[in-house]
Image 1 (cartoon, chains in turn cyan, blue):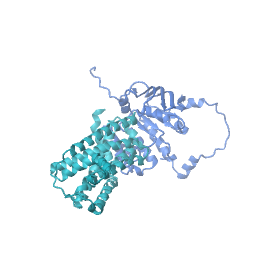
Image 2 (cartoon, rainbow over the protein chains, first blue to last red):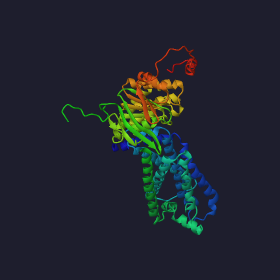
Image 3 (cartoon, each protein chain N blue to C red):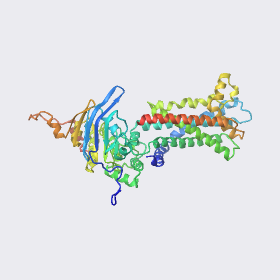
Image 4 (tube, rainbow over the protein chains, first blue to last red):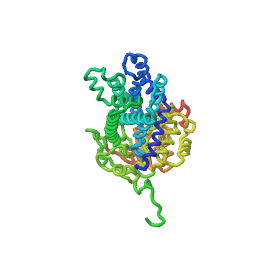
Length: 253
Length: 265
């Protein structure tokens, strides 16, 4: 049955993408929370935060982009959850199609929906004065890192999408992810935090990802941060992928 | 391969019954739902599995549709073992579950095209249009399914099950939750299917439905088949009919149709 994996995944992705384009509010909602946080921080708190020579909107955009992804993948879990609730999931499972295609369609749709939200948020940041001298390679590196983060968090979102008992449960796992950037280098330099908090902030994944993207935008050397960020993303991706596979096989056998 | 022989398709009918079940068992935790079910469904027949809620009808259908693994016993569909030849079974069947398995956000036509594409058929648009006509859904074709009535949804659901002309169709409580008019619509769709030579295994908790549609009826009770036969055979199990004179009150259903002024067509 593996021969049809690509064809079946393409057809099923077309279906879920229509779900997204027919409820554009999900993309808007995904973008609105990070945009609101961005407005708050740049125009209200930002003046009190010392980020050195870097303008505050330039400083905080990487963290805002991560919050965008964290709120976007909640919809990935919810879309999958509704498929499981209705009969359509069982219809697909009883058909002669590549079974992995059902999950991959949700993963690819999540990637597309999140990329649209990320572009939206970046455009608003540009209006608010975000500027970068980053070249094509640096932009590609930023895009690649954001895609990797989206993939890792999407596979994480697949797990509650498959196992949640209620729609609230399916979406709730994203709240801690949205909150995580606040205890990192995303909005304030970690040097200003008290010892234990700073230790946590310095060693959690968001800080290395934010630092890597920030350095790419400001044309600074990315140093070790990019490797630590990649290690976190690939590690999370692998763990989430394996667990999602377990959850899926439990569901369909 | 001998000269002149054409290679058989994977889903070509195998000799023997469309569905054969022997000693099928299934438990959930400590509750045993199926306790040794034996069943044969002849090719091209409509077979009704009758039983009250929780009798194990849905469990049975889910095992036959490869959605659930049995704990013991064997089941073959179209000659293929559900446990070891699941892919071939899936090529041979389609399933319409208790809850209409349609995509609410897509239009009726898009739902049909989706299934035709997933079955890797040519001209999915033409297939969709033909089925829309056959199930009187042409006018609603472009509308989102979320705006459909219960009967329209179930008709669309059954139409989706016919794509690719699988030889065996499972209908799990196809009329549960429908109003009388929609029920008549679904019955017509099932008769339509049977005319085309498709084997239909349907589950129902309505005796009337089994009477209306089925060539053969089995009653599933507490995880076992307690009766299996044609309607005439089943009626012989009752004491012989005696003639009584009773004033015939119209049923509420007859009142409904008299007032609505329609036979559901």
